Image 1 (cartoon, rainbow, N blue to C red):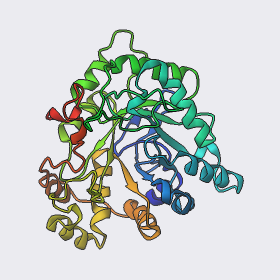
Image 2 (cartoon, helix red, strand yellow):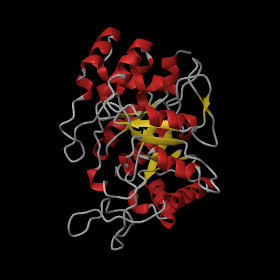
Image 3 (cartoon, helix red, strand yellow):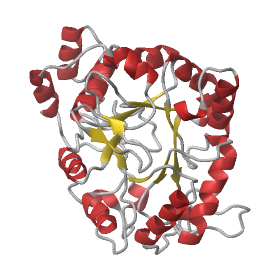
Image 4 (cartoon, rainbow, N blue to C red):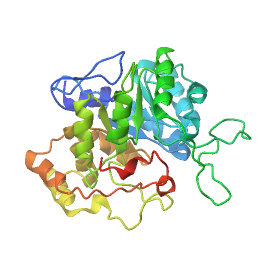
Length: 347
């Protein structure tokens, strides 16, 4: 069976190129691609307003790894789509690899399981395949809300975020209990630097280490040192903003260059007769990175599956490596004064 066929069938959990195995969860071992199998090197993320339109199409063309989060407020819509595609026979539950995330206002250990249970209710699922701590930074909840965390960015009268002092190692212990309860097959983190990862890895009594670290990663921020660190600890690096960004003013520095207009990417894309976006996605896959692709255009969703139709040469990879400028599109300036702000470290 071809790499493309395998990719279309099995985009359901995180794995990489290579010659060994990748444990994306402690229950299942996912083979690396060796011409015989590939597991979800490509993942789709769909915004709330677009979920009902584009997620069914993505599943129909072969996507199986779906990235959700409480903060994206897309779980109810994604849940509807998953149930409908199971009902019409397109997929079985075990075919879908569904990720969700624990938001910053629910990092207190006693809030972790209720937050996950709320996500499961919204998704209409008995378990998620992967549950991720969205950031290492805790924010205080407002108890006047019906549900902790509904105010995603609680601020004081001066417009500053209200920080909470929570040891994320205690949060991790609560996530371990969720895994033991069968509510999550795997547990991981997002936006952690290597020192924060080390604190979990070196935590006394650690039961499960993070299976992944989801971070911004693209040719302008290739995260090579963090990738090497993660690989050395058998942690899968998952890339968001793999194509740069959609330049949303509220989140993204508008002065940064547009990644997909880079002349090096354009030249490589012309050589392979592929788009610059496909080259950027393929670059990650060949580095052993699972890459998220935003799914808000049917043409692009279908086109992204072509990432398995070609291979970049070592010269291509070296040229793209040379594009690294340590440009972070999502700088999260709101949280820069938080004691656990993760982006002050080199990696």
